Image (tube, rainbow, N blue to C red; front, side, top):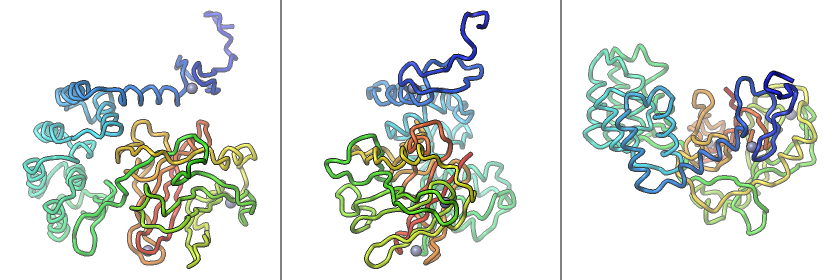
Length: 374
Ligand SMILES: [Zn+2]
Ligand SMILES: [Zn+2]
Ligand SMILES: [Zn+2]
């Protein structure tokens, strides 16, 4: 017992869901991470139009604080993720105050703000070139594309301070430049969440199926990470046909490539493995393959998965744990597109870290699965 009369060894079960939280450090949270995130989500989702407008006005009033990761930032990300707010007014205020982070502020920026960003980059020693390029990439229209092509060719002085080429900055906002010089998205705008539910009513996709086959490297049982009904109305935009499965080894693979035979049979190849030892318990495997997560019928905004982060979804922007990692298709060399982001914590229903990123080549239909963790 400590002086407050609490047993130090007492387990910290969440008051709402009963999950054991383990060591809490100095936190006195009575709700677990998931339940707190769920409450945050409900708070934003329940906001009326008037409350959203008031919150946007607050963000604009505090625009200089938006980059610091605190309340203004969190409100912006919450409203973008769950209310899909139009960011034009916030972008205008940000630009007037030299605020260039986080770049999604500029998604809906007007032509005057966009042209303002381009003119900042005209200065040979633009201090903020890194951030300004990302903001311009968010806008991604023909004027932005022209600027990217021009600066890539001209190689202004500020280029020396970049991490990679000018065009590479498109990738930091899930975009790329196609052969015609246009900016194209490397993600699918329609976004759906995986939620707990029975596999009745023909879901468009679901998580987890056992393959009853062992990984040749680590001995863990292989699984179908994801099964997609390519003919389902909700997923027509993916241009897949028939049922597409995504087999992986859940234990060892940090990068897996999956190719399909003409009959649609999946063949996986572990390209990069993290370990040769099987750390995956039978209990984890059971939770992962129970098929309890199915695709919802409710569409979500493209930034869904930024607040809360611990979700599983098909479509939408990548909430990368590290630098955005768009693979070159191993078959045609073109950039692959982000198909799904699946948080391990959601897949396993525990406090696991990291996420799986599923990418697809729109032309070859080859799939890559990558693990990222902070
Ligand atoms: Zn809880
Ligand atoms: Zn393995
Ligand atoms: Zn390809």
